[in-house]
Image (cartoon, rainbow, N blue to C red; front, side, top):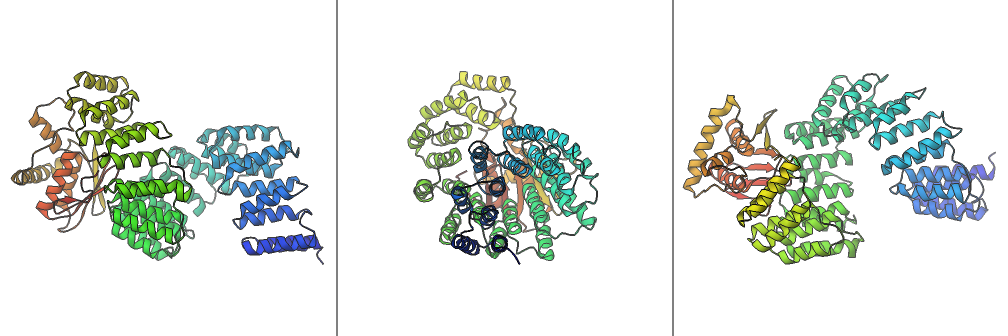
Length: 610
């Protein structure tokens, strides 16, 4: 027969995961006078944590008169997996000083996990030094945690040294190092190590694919997923599907994304929230906002990521009214918006000229949701004000906000000053921006144009000197389009020989038709010192025009043309694509580095706010 303490411990473990059951078990222990008898406090702390009741666990910990190593170990393990891992640091200090306890291998593993979560290399190195000098220096579990910590802190070479010291390597530590190499851009080493893993399973494949996608090597990640399927690895977990769908989103691979949607359906993962979230993001980034919304509406259980992904998608596609209505639905559903949600909402207002609504949202962050606006929120709000012509208010916001304005902040105001022809403010803002010695080549183009328009040729020379001194080169423009199952990449000024005649002929025909409709090239974005006709030819060969022309020539009649560009659309290309959409009566969607432009019938979804 179990003793009262053992029976109580069994009851608490059985209750873990159910808040009401854990609290009920706690109440019974209080009534029976067993709550402070070991191991009840530690088991209760663990049960509270598993029931998402960390505040209750912390309160119980504070109320316990005799805190032993077992209790500390349980609390630190709970905190290391919580949304607030930084709470572990004061708890550790309390253990070392107030209760003069030395950490065991369980505590050391938890602190390594905290270091990884916080990306704190300093804490991780201190922990490692303590571990080496401790009686537990041979513990492989702690070493595995250190491997993971070093990988997540961006030093996979240090992780490899610890890895090599482990006697019995399990699949977890192999996978941690593979993921660490891949996510830190060391794909060759990741693949080499992956090939050495004994008995590779889904967990190992997922780690490699996830690391590659995270490092921006989505093509390699997708190729590995295909190889994994050919190897007959059974997919019994939704995470790998969500990762490869995210890879398709990064590539704007619409056809691949739809195929993965079909795979998710066949494998029975459409009910998975993480797969649903990935599909919403994928369709949005692949310019099919209607399919994104259809998937969203089909997700039964939505979290803040689901709502925010859809809100931001609607905003980037210029559908401000839809984004605002969705935000209201989210709040009514009892989901609290986060920092990213508000970036999307203020962005939506900015690109639709909804100044008053944007003000309300910015003010509500602190007033209604206790969220302190960050620099990105201030930049979006300033962009809203300046785009709508409230230039003095925007300049005052820069002077009074609790952050030092960065390149993006000054750049947003300068673009608006140029748009509204406020020469005096243009020069003032441009001078502030130039002092930052910006890194983005497009900022220098904007500065040069502003100074040139206002006759400040000495400042134009200074801008060019800065670019030369800092070795800043204009990013080469390129665009790509998916036609059938193939991607076609176009660089500015370069027309592939095999389609040169068709593309040049089509564009010549379009220019003739556009000029009949009053088109006059806007060469203000061309920085080169060229004759006017040469500047026009330079614009004529911008990458997005080449991609659109190829798409219109090669795609089935009536299909939507979807193009992705690495830079911001220039003013002239924006005008040209509006006219082409009207002439050929086709919908053209271009995703540039900040938003989507839906061109149809001579109009754009951005309503000239971009």
